[in-house]
Amino acid sequence: MEVADLIAAHVVDVPDFPKPGVLFKDLTPLFGDGPTLRACADAIVAAAGPFDLVAGIEARGFIVAAAVAYATGTGVIPVRKAGKLPGPTTTITYELEYGTATLEIPERAGLADRRVLLVDDVLATGGTVVAASELLWRGGGRVVGVSVVLELAALGGRSRIANTHSNLPIHALLSV
Ligand SMILES: O=P(O)(O)OC[C@H]1O[C@H](OP(=O)(O)OP(=O)(O)O)[C@H](O)[C@@H]1O
Ligand SMILES: Nc1ncnc2[nH]cnc12
Image 1: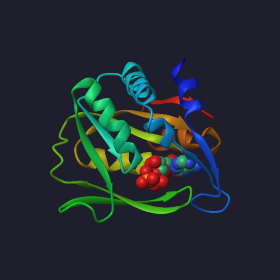
Image 2: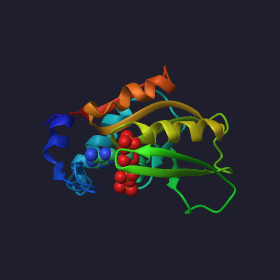
Image 3: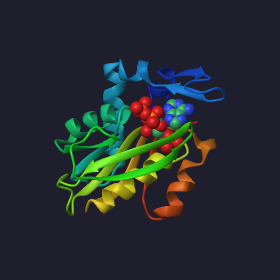
Image 4: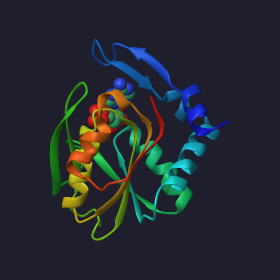
């Protein structure tokens, strides 16, 4: 089965979560299926250019990032929600589809001049990826690509990212 079909078969639509009006795409069945998780990681690696480090966005992005890192022998930089890291940190607050959130990376992340592949499970409005990219650049990294398992195209994340990072390759394994 194609990876896009595998993903489609392992995503569950949950209406009105976490807020009324949001159709939440639950990837829990995908993460719970070993062959599908592995196929996603392998497909992300196959589509990406060369990179030295994988950045994953808390929390679901960590799962994808760790699988991609294991497949390539690279390390992971965790991009964390507020208050989880000892200082010093670099911090950004941004708009989500369903609220606001804050992301942080440690200033001692060891990012200097590393080529970073930024991965997440879902691309929705793109606010999270834009904020995470900004943080990684500020930390001295070179963000060379964005890879997600599932893109919710109607929410416009791709063009929002292109507005701020015009040459950044964005790849989604499945776009709905
Ligand atoms: O493109 P955007 O509109 O910014 O939304 C996408 C982000 O939203 C979800 O994370 P969430 O904040 O729900 O956190 P979680 O992974 O901890 O569940 C998802 O995992 C992405 O990180
Ligand atoms: N509708 C959605 N489903 C799953 N994750 C999301 N992140 C942002 N919007 C989302």
